[in-house]
Image (cartoon, rainbow, N blue to C red):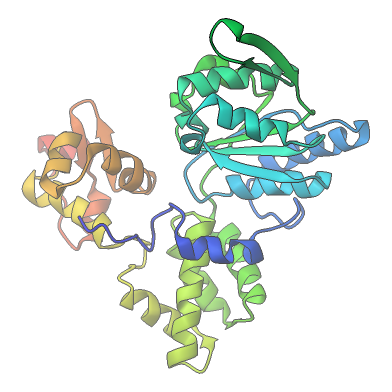
Length: 343
């Protein structure tokens, strides 16, 4: 498969970082979607403000692009404190963790993206910081070395993970609040697209808003990315106005179909259907056929295809559903076949 960044991939791209600051909601009132999470987090933040305490440690789980980083910054904004950001792989030793923690001011937010990728030594060093606001370290070397416990300012740790199952139980148990973020509904994405269009000063018709939202795979990050591409197309080819026709032409040029699938998604479905008679077929076999890593197929491509009902995961492998056949313009297997019985 191509190593080019996917337009409809949920992982952050450089261009996303450049515009995240302007499009990212600053408060819970501005945040769209995740209603249950927003309500519970709002109560948690307001209670902490009234008590003058840090917010209880928060773990945010869910697929990429759904707003975990945004919620971490909102917590900081609501409390009026700084947000210090890092990622699990970036903290490569306990000393690096200690350096960050010692710089935290009272009630600051410490955001750790991909927290499931912390190495074991760093994770264990984080435990006393989360429990008692202390950091254990060793001063000196050799026979003169001594273990000391350094006090830390009270802070809130916000961890974000796309793989909650990879978190160790001791780490997970140290978070007082665990929230799961789900894919967004079409109306929620339409609200996000309208808001972003206002910020980007883009004149957009309602039909174009619907088209962008429909192809955004339930993910705000992708909605904003597609909207920016439609804006570029509108400014160059359509006098700056994003109509439904302009949006359709722009997204067709980008090979994003009406349901948000791109060529990589379609290639996976075509591989299962054409090479393996629709399945069931093992993940490793699919990955080999596509010259891709099994983990990439499972973590990057499959979630949306399964969520939309194009693929089923069975005990015998992956199976293309009747919906996948119809999406590719093919006739589903005849009734009574083994493959059809699993649809």
